[in-house]
Image: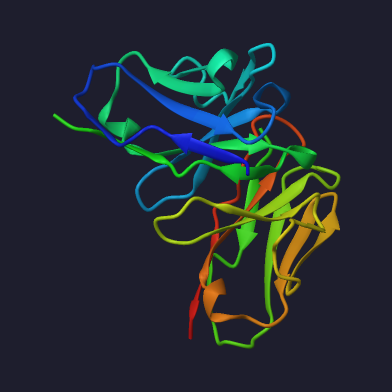
Length: 118
Length: 107
């Protein structure tokens, strides 16, 4: 069974760093792109970027380039999303998802809620 | 970036109704169009990929059509579990932009 399991909710202060994770199982982790999607409170879905764990090829949305870093450790089938200096506007739910046919996202993690507040 | 629009932004419908949601891309995306359903507090769920291919396990009352710039999602007979928000997404080029969503609620 394909599963993506994300790390738990985080509460951080502005300026702090953070790395959240997404662990894949039940499939060949190195053979599928993994994407990250942001959903701010009460808002729609925003495509942030994708990574191919097989060779760590990474693509970012211009809206998120330089704001976050996407990485992966294929030895433990885990993708990451990290911030070096959080802002209150980073408060959102973050989802990881596996990309499959026609680059659709067929399996999703349960989401990680990140709250940034002083 | 390719821009995606959806209409309507919300609609009210009754169980058994036929519901159609439209999605438009700012440039041709061939058939690289996906539809997702999201319920409150849950992750999105893939319904349709490649404009008209039904994802495994999704009920056949859901269907998709279109190519180029104009696409539709149709629910042939709305069921109680279908009340949710629906998003289209283009996967023709990065970033894989989503539409703003269409909320389907109970009339």
